[in-house]
Length: 395
Image (cartoon, rainbow, N blue to C red; front, side, top):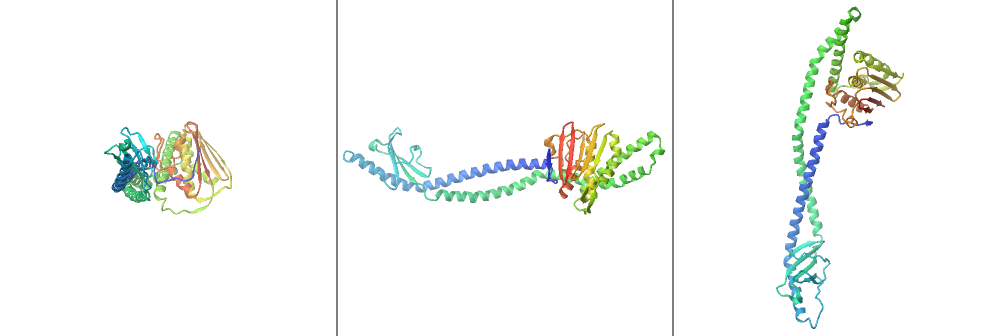
């Protein structure tokens, strides 16, 4: 079961799918680019900051080396490792084994000469003389205050600018990608408009002349042929009305009134009776009296016609259709082919057809969606493959 309350009746599923795929891919690539650029920028700023501290750290290291030399010379008199409030330090032997350390970190990378780790700057220098058996000395100081905050603020600013630039580029790329679809839809719309214009006169002429024929006065074979012509003419007429509504719906005025549904439905059932008879479909109806809906009569007729037409079109020979009208809802059930549940959400999209074995442009249910949305009607669809479909219109 799927309740359809809102539809984007102007954007086809193929467009949505292309749009979604493009947005996902473009967002992923944009994120990768931004992360890569941010990584490079952060690394550049870090290296610049470390280079600016190199001379000062080198001086501090030299001071500490001088103290180590003094301790080494006077080790018999004084055996206290020299400390300094400005930095922490550590010494290591030639096998990188720690001799003594006041560092906060126990894992120092002695292969680097200067680096940043967990808010601390480490400067490593190889000793020329083995004071106290030390081959390497490491100096640890705090990173400059607010340095990282400033870098992150710059990353946010430059990232936002870059994101806007990439979004602007993406907008034009998206238009390029969707342009073939838009051109195809525009071509189809122009074709429909031209076709509609040419259909009007011959359809009216056929229907008018058929209505003037007295079938009772004809032999059975000829009457049967006339009925077939009538069915074909009504089918074309129904398609013509759909095309006309599709073209003019944005400019047509609505004349809303309290429409009694029972006589309207009976009239439409009579209109489709020949088509129903041709497929040997059993049509039954339970229509309660005095049920009114405030709506434009032509639009209500169009809504009902399209749902009933689909129930006939996608039904099987010797199938059945059951119509129930009661307070608050109208149900149309058929014993037709049914449709997969995952496709139900796309049934109301313009030009969408899931069964190419029957005719049509795929616009009938799109018109139903348009009218239902205008009058806040709720369309609920239950369908099972090879069992049938039930469409419920609620208000």
